[in-house]
Length: 241
Image 1: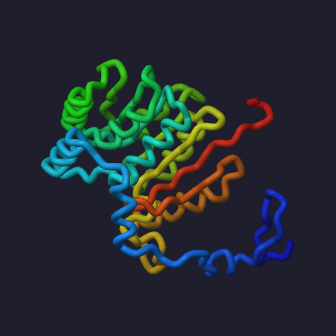
Image 2: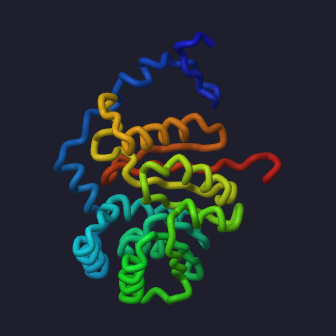
């Protein structure tokens, strides 16, 4: 293979790297279509109340389109065990819980205990039994190493963007084969796609995308919902089958 070509690992022909980057397959989506897609799965009054709480405490929760994607992924995975980094006021957590099995448990981590108190209010208003949401106060990198290897179906990360690379490393350990890791803000306010943007958070999110793409055991997709949702499936390895 010549250096400036990218091979198709599933047997397709090699494709020049510059063509992969530059040749569009569709026209850019219009703002009206983006808004339509974002609100395609409507939120109820409970999620609206959780968003109001988030605004009061200065938290920016995942958008409705991203939340719907989380619920979809949790449902497809028939998820019984999910980890969330960044509880906020329970917006993303409620989307996840609504997609999980009825006996599924969400382990959600946040450095702010007050945020978790508000999230518990959200879950209670939605009729989620208390034993289905385990809240842990602390930083993601303090808590994740204490969780069980290979136990989780989905890991959702919406914490410190500078730590996204470290979250990925922990998620690969925590996920069962076939599980999925998801990162919010994967486009980071349109900064990731602009190479001139070199602030610490943008570089960290950009490097995360590169790491996910280059990881041999991950099947990635970058969804342009909300502020970007990067998801990757941990493939089954022969020794794990």
